[in-house]
Image 1 (cartoon, rainbow, N blue to C red):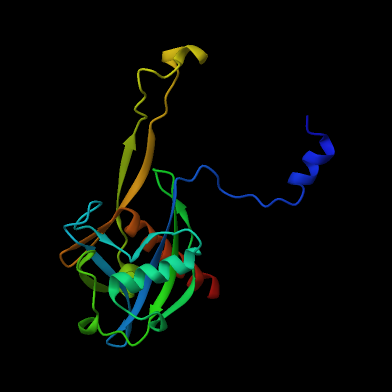
Image 2: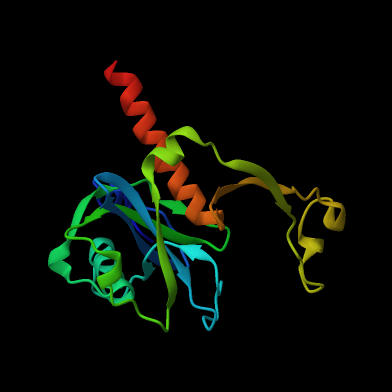
Length: 211
């Protein structure tokens, strides 16, 4: 049996971390300069992709073993957009978030130097097309917000007999907001819109605090 002193030694200087995470993902939120103005770059996922084909996203993907979140974001951006690592400047970390599948997503705000949309050699296997949206658009256009709800799908084998009140146990319906931005003929929604909204929110708050 472990002694109390040993337990204290294990936890005294331990730093807390998120547990029960299924997968770790990193994304790169690219700022580019178009006609002298800052834009955010988005990509349309290839229709041949198994997950979310044709939807709008940021460059990014699963963090591989042995690499940092930032390294993963840079690697995926280079692979998907066909840019050199030297072109990418990581400005800073954005707020990370946990999705409904227990996947942790780490967004990084960055800048693509010497950006020329016509010279990008995008990976056609992953990216159908790319487009940019002026940052000013998001500062003057709030997203549409819709609620999405779901309840747990519990199997017949679940041991309700071990729980007080059994099968009549009160299940909660989870409800969360889903954001939509519409720009030209593009619909930016879901996680991508959520990250965009949070970025804009931080910028607006910073401007207010400086006044």
